[in-house]
Length: 264
Image (cartoon, rainbow, N blue to C red; front, side):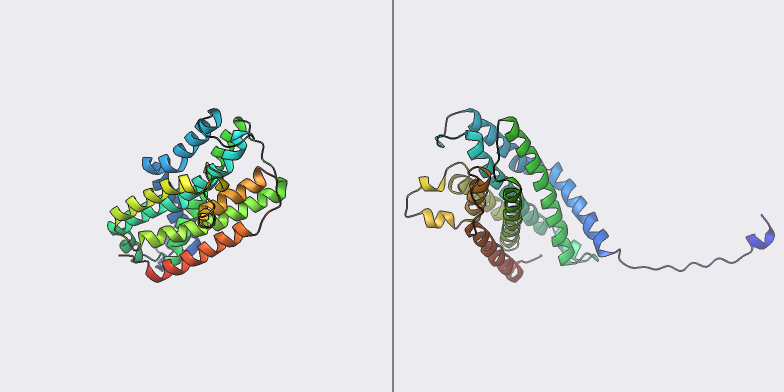
C-alpha cells in the first residue's frame, strides 16, 4: 500500500439516535414472545389446559353437550378460552409483575414509546394466538372436527378473534395497571376459572337459567364462543350481535385503560 493512501485522513461522523420505530417494536415483540414461551405457567394456561380440555371432553361423555359430535361443539369454545388465556390472563399477570419489578419504568426511559411497547405486546399476543389456533385446530381435526362456514365463516371467525383480542388486552392492561401484582395474579386466575364455567366454553348458554342468560351473553368470552360456534359448528350466517358486544368491550376497556393505567 502506498504512503499516500496510508496518510489519507479519515473522517468519522457519528450519528447517534434511536433505531426506527418498526425495528424497536419488532425487537421488543420478539423479546416478549421469548419470555412468554419460556414461562411454564403461561404455557400451562395458553396451551396445555385448552388442549387437555378439548381432548378430555371430546373422548369422554362426562359432560352432556347435546347429540352432535362432541368435538364440533367443544372446539369453538376451546378456541375462545385459548384467546382469553393469552390476551387477558397471561398478559395481565405478566404486565402486573413487570410493573411491580420496575421493568415498565425502565422501558419508559428508553426510546421505545408507550405506543411502541403496546404494539410489541400486541404482536407477541397475536403470534401466540396464531400458534394456539394452529395447535388446537390440528388436535381438533385429528379428533374428527368438521368446521363449517367456508371462507365467509373463517373470515368472520378471524374478525371475532381480532375484536376479542383487543377487548381482552385492554381489560388486562386495565387490571395490571391499577391493581398490585399479587392481586392481579389472583383476580386474573379467578376470572379465568369463572369464565371457563360461565362463558359458554363447555356449556351452551341456553343451559343457564333464563334470568341470568342476558348477563352471560354480554360477556366478551361468551360473545366470542357463541359467535365462533354459530358459524364453525352450525354453519349459520354470521351474526352482528357478537361483533357489537366485542367491539363495545374493546372500546370500554381501551378507554378505561388509557385513563387509569399506571406505569409505576
